[in-house]
Image (tube, rainbow, N blue to C red; front, side):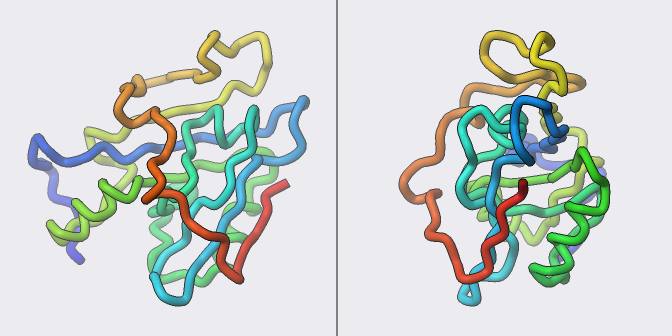
Length: 166
């Protein structure tokens, strides 16, 4: 696949840059990372309710493209786990849902966190900073179409390589 050009087509789906910061009222990030032998990539498994992962907009079935600004396409499950754990109390995951993933693959493009259409979503590290909907938005605002729960097609079974981030 080629890198994403400077100018994306207007219909290019927006990847989500989920900035997870550990919070005192929750143990860990609250998501499972898993890989499947039949399908390349690292995917988000179960996302715990009220977790930093949920508050930062992560959805079950999302494919991880970057961890802390580094593309992880050629990395093993173990390497991705190590990269997420490299920064003790926060991590930034660029993710795409299954529809966006299919679009980028069809167009032979790789989403990047530097694209103009990236939605940045950060969970609050202090409970009193969370708006009523649970999401804190910095540079970019979430849209309703990408903030909805995953469809049954997006929900994936846990694979043998599962990692719970606590």
